[in-house]
Length: 286
Image (cartoon, rainbow, N blue to C red; front, side, top):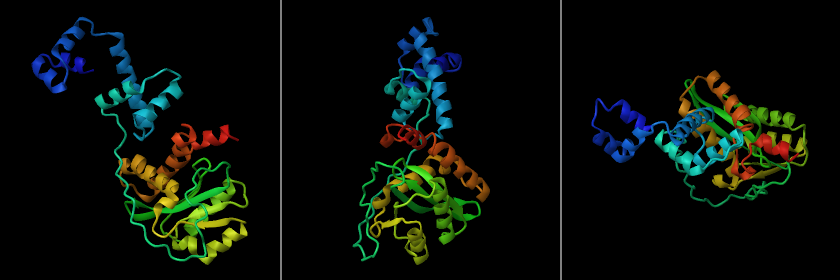
């Protein structure tokens, strides 16, 4: 593709200067001129076009390794990671850069009647054994809104979520009710959260008890105790919401639905699930 550019601009710029700027050799360019339509060159151009299409479809959320796996699974072809990485660099098709996450300083835990039963045991062998939940801020053109999500640790699937104007009890209850309906009212489920006031309230404790759930809570000020749901919120924002920009409330809600229900649950592959999506993992392991 660089050679094509040089050929098109040969009347406007010196070959030696373009070769130096593009970091390629003049001899390579002249060799290409003798055979400009080589199979490898055409294959790379076609592959670069495919990479662009897939990255746009995946919201530029995949790096070269994950994208290589995705293309191989979809196209059913043999494909090398180094080749994909090279074409992504040359065509500026890499994943959106993510900010570095820093572990907060640990604080001494306060005594609580609700223990940390999960204890960072994130690998779960059966569905509906451990659910985790949290609330995150979502910025819109009309101010901050809030998203409550519930994940089944078995498949990392978001089984219930709620989006609203307030970080209050109805926000949590709507997400919990959606999860109960989606999973057909399971029993003896461990429900793990942080120590947010909504989850600590007597009202929510009664609802968990009524549904025969077992409550578990992270240590105070330690987000790593609920790392999986934290990772989901990070992916949602950096892979999808931040690149789009600030939207109004209705547009934000529609985009949340698209990301969670269409992309994350059904398309986004997880290395912890053997490079499968949550939906695919649950269907294969049913």
